[in-house]
Length: 350
Image (cartoon, rainbow, N blue to C red; front, side, top):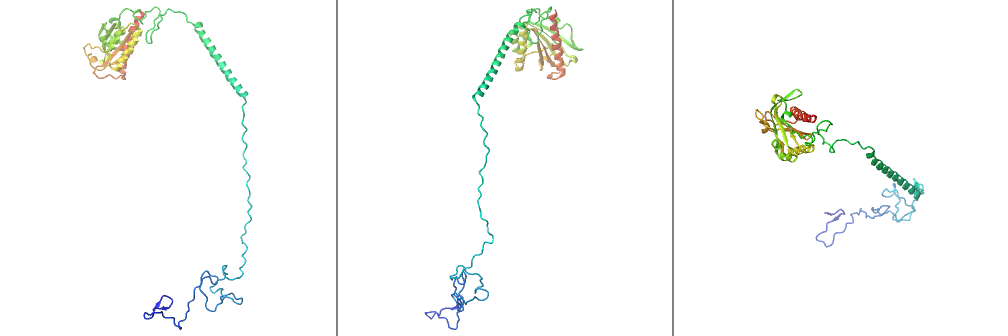
């Protein structure tokens, strides 16, 4: 039995020393000696090869025993090494070239302002201010002289002008802007001389008329107290049907001290009506007119001189009247804004 790959037999267990190699067994293995024959590692040559350089020795055909054609640069022998070949790709000598420094445009020269320029500008500003001051002063002087030059000629009109919406006094006619110039109270016949109110062919049938000295009877809530404080002294009213009896309306005139209190009464009516604390009431006189005191109504009022004319309208079927309904607007326009306003204006011609 062999041991390994070297051809040794196993040691005899009865012998103390291992059995030596027989003479008939040739030793054909070669010792490995690195660095021979230009190799970095290899095997020792067969016995008989020279181990030192010999001028008459030439390697076998094909080069070295291992077919190498080059000389080991690290061989231990003193053979002359071949000269290195010239560089097949010579490079030109590099000569560094220095770049020129960057060139920048010189900065623009700074403009220096002299003190003379500032003084000139300041003088110009002062001159403008002086001219403006002179212009303003001249304006005030001229404006003060205007009233004296354009003073209106004196007139016989009263010093207090009539408020907006009131009748202006005309020479030769009665002034209806105050009870002082229009002391006579209104009458039912004066306001309602006929049984109907005719406006552009539309006839409103009057059901009943009334004249009172207590203005509270025509109001609800706090409005009566407000009218009393403003000096209301008289109320003349009537209840009527619209054409076709579609609407029931109460129309009337409140007599105040002067035009200013009548205008104030208009404002108080709007305020209290908007807050729900007072209103001008309709007057139910029977014969199908009770709906004006039991259902929701719509109101229109305006001052004329020292009077306040009004109209309260309700639907005959008891439904809420629509202010945007043209029929409702027609009743208000015919009765208060046209008829009653015209009847009061007739007092100025008496």
